[in-house]
Image (cartoon, rainbow, N blue to C red; front, side, top):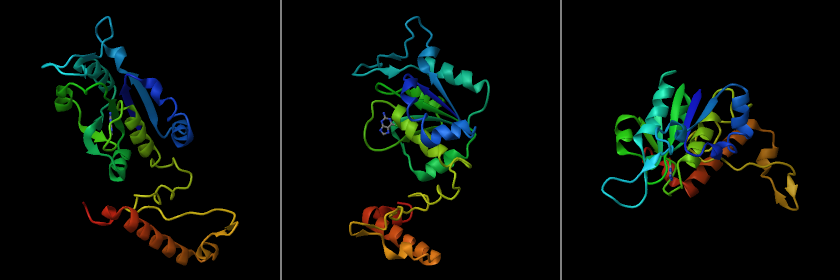
Length: 227
Ligand code: 6GU
């Protein structure tokens, strides 16, 4: 899979993509992540990427031309399955959307800034709009990093233990059950006996019950179908 990220702050991605699972996925050649500085596609001598809103008001608006130049340049070399704009008024991101995106070949993630981007880009160029939650970030970069991480970790071959992504919270619509490691007794804080029993079927049943119970208590909405 190939992910092209369009941003005015490419350095913001140095951290999240240089460690852990995303780093390993890149090294294994399972994902290519390309960062593009929108400012490099500005057309005037000041390398301007934003301008005042028509009709007045506070805040600046990202201009069509630098963004579109960058996208058109990428489209010369390959077709894109989705051109995604990260924005707080987009569709709420969740595990099913991460799963959908993870089967695509080429996607673009556009990070917005200022008051937003010229609406005509949204009408004519953007194919999908995603928000990562009901709060406002300074820009789309952190959201793009979140979306990228969630996609990359479920790409086939990325996780060593092929089943471990499947047992994630949300992957079966439930929260994950509690987990424990050594010691079995920490100063009187004991691990549930069932986990030490060696009885695989009973352990699986216990984990499923715990997952259900935890979901019922913390996120009952997840148990109602399609709400
Ligand atoms: Cl995608 N962008 C910004 N700026 N803020 C957000 C967001 C995105 N998702 C939640 N808050």
